[in-house]
Image (cartoon, rainbow, N blue to C red; front, side):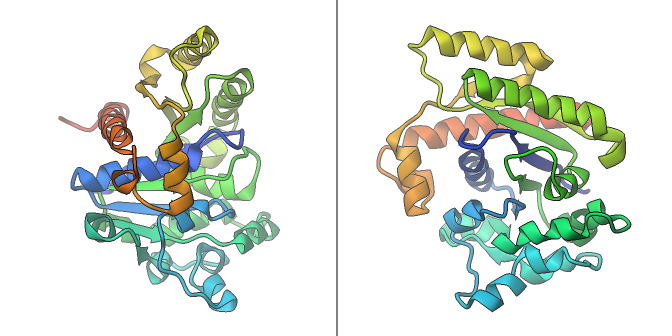
Amino acid sequence: MTPPHWAIATHKGGVGKTKLIELVAAAAAEAGDRVLFVDMDAQANGTRRLRAQIPTDPAQRVDASLASVLQRPAKGEIERILVPCGWGGIYSERITIAPSHLDLELLAQTAMQANSSRRLLTALAGVVDDFDVVLIDCPPNLLSHLIDNAWTASDLLWVSTEPEFDAVEAARRVCERVDADRDMLNPELQVAGFIINRYRQSLNLHKKRADEVGGILGPDAVCPVRFPELVALKNGSELAKPMAEVDGGRAMTTLAKDTYRWMRERSDKLMGVAA
């Protein structure tokens, strides 16, 4: 059976989108699931933080990334660039990465070609059957050719947000764009839910904004786990290590496991997967 394809989306940078997808990928691996991480963000932060084993030579690095695959992909062509996560242990065994590169931005030059928004979907064809979940890290915008490709290839969107006014409004805009362009991109595409980062329980403002997130699609669409802002998260990103190996990171691994469990349950419900 084809695994669920999840995109992590946002319309505001700096809300912890890539950190969230790293945490989810690690939690999935720890749960025994096989993960395909597709880095559609040309900043390639996820590629670095997961220590994707990519060439050091600049020219070879482009050829070994999605920047080359998505120019005119054959079915399943993404397989030729897949590399393991470099964290070691179960993470290397269970997390596979389709690396990004800055040149991925150049894909916009081909946006007017026929079926150009289906290129990622074409490149993934057949390859995904070896995995339990596909995670697609999107760039932090809404109107771009990379977003069109990522969302066309996705079943569900998860929106990363902070409990701040600008971030909540950005989360609304994700839903508005899906509603406006769903038929053009993917008629089955759904916004699955919201995951709140950098939450301070002591701030009444954060509680208020979290309630506002619940008003976008209903409270059931908001993950009950709220990630606090901890130094351990920043250290994990800086050191490119899983949270289980970062000082003070054990609490984050527990929150990530609970989040992944909630996402799987909600995904199965929305996609009509039998229990």
